[in-house]
Amino acid sequence: MALALQQLINGLTLGAVYGLIAIGYTMVYGIIGMINFAHGDIYMVSAFIAVTVFTLLATFGISSIPLSLLVVLLVAVLFTSVYGWTVERTAYRPLRGSTRLAPLISAIGMSIFLQNMVQLTQGARVKPIAPVLVGGIDLLTVDGFTVRLAYSQILIVLVTVALMAGFTWLITRTSFGRQQRSCEQNRTMTALLGINVDRTISLTFMLGAALAAVAGVMVTVYYGVVDFFIGFVAGIKAFTAAVLGGIGSLPGAMLGGLLIGLIEAFWAAYLSAEYKDVATFSILILVLMFRPSGLLGRPEVEKV
Image (tube, rainbow, N blue to C red; front, side, top):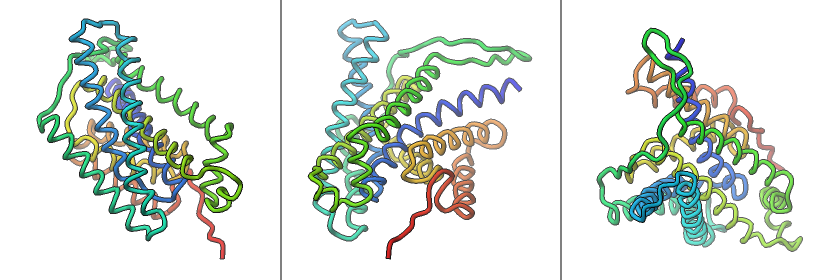
């Protein structure tokens, strides 16, 4: 019972991170109908930015945890938003009128470029930082096993819930959200109505990158180590979460992320940590066999 509760906490924390990255995937897919495979590496870049800024703040003697987190989040969001804008301008916009395969290959190329750029500039070794948010709440102890809710886990869940609520409001209640949905339906008609389609798509990429930045900072605070390869692994998991929940659905992306986090946590605890990825992708295959649109996705209806 105690182990199950601990794994539930760990799974929800991990799933919240996957969900944040998956929302970026699903926002981009919703507006241009393509997957941004460089998204996971933007998350990786944000984690390295977080390590760098945390180290600089420690060097200057800034020890306030709230101030440090705020500064790191602002810097990471700013820089990764620029990366997101650059990816859209260089890898997607010039190929928007071409076949669907061309932007996909371009995005994979951008992903490889970001990986190698970070590896060359930061080195291939793991980058550790001193613990930022230590301590937690001991919930219960059973047979010597203590169920612990770390402060970093509380932070991740609270930030995820706040961002999920904020982005849902942004998409459903604001003028920009209506522009996004209009671009999703028909970009030509949207342009005829006087909406700047290029600006809307660029801002969507930047918002997705900002979410990836928050996820990167949260992971850095939680684990305390990063390396240049985390973007590929997390990107694949987040893409799987977006497909599992229903690509194009924000609640579906978060649901998919939470499910994958829980599957990995419980599978690693009770069966085998080595095969947790096999379990995740097997369940994805089963879901898509019986519900191709995902758990919360809507089947696409093609107009003829």
